[in-house]
Length: 421
Image (cartoon, rainbow, N blue to C red; front, side):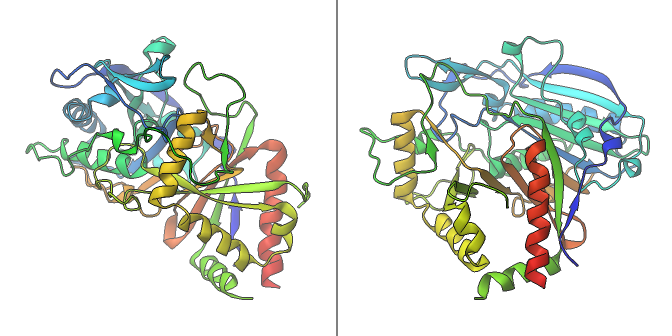
């Protein structure tokens, strides 16, 4: 069986939601007002990461009860996570984004759908309608008042429900987001469980050196076209198409075997692939596991289109592996210092981020673990999300402009067909 392409169900772009509540909620205790430092690795992550976590119906926890418990848990967890209730602030003299910890609150949304979970279809194939399960903004607020985090509960007519989260990526990376969910779940129990993880907030551990020292070439970094006068807001202005690549265990075995054995495009153009990785254990003074920020970096592989076409698959795998091995303590520090000097960003024609080891589906709430956890499509056209599918499959959510998607699908099918001949 060859890897397959699944297009999101076009009939499921509207989940027929009624929004019952849309409000701000605040820390249960007064928190300290302060400016919160963001590292150079976070300065260009000003976009929302949206996720949807589906739960089966529970007779002991109807959606109304879940909403009440969830609200209580958010209020409590915002005390140790006070920065999540803040707002972004541009520090002009330093030319960088900070978080103003001002207790302005996070968004809390309650909605219900006319549909049952079964009517939505394959939960592991995120439909565009899933965007309704993790709204990014509250309609009654001006742009400068919008929260950095919105948590939403949506009930379905079958009694099942979804918890959606829309979190500005500057706040948390994937591992920190999973720890936040563990802490949030712990506070939803009525026996006052302690936090399973104490978040470590000192992001100065990834601050630039003084003076900065760029000791390596960084061809995957781009300088800004002009002066930086505010926080960047990544996102494509073009219309994007979305597909899910379904890769079975058999496909994975085939790719592994192919990597160990001996498109219509500009052949001289260089293509950069970034594989996002956790760097907590890669630094000489290892970052704490509980480091609550973005300790991620893209290991790059760079090659001309002409070479990609003619090289064996094993050579491409080797390049990706070398890109990951390149990310050492000194290399990361050099990159941070490059960003301090140039105020740019890391760039890839294809950015691959994996959820496979994060374990979102293992978070235990009072009403149980999620039946399914998936990313929600956004406007980042170069991003590919890798996550677990059903029955041991691996799914990849691909986001490309309309004019590129047909060509992408052709080459995807062509690769497997030619390799299996």
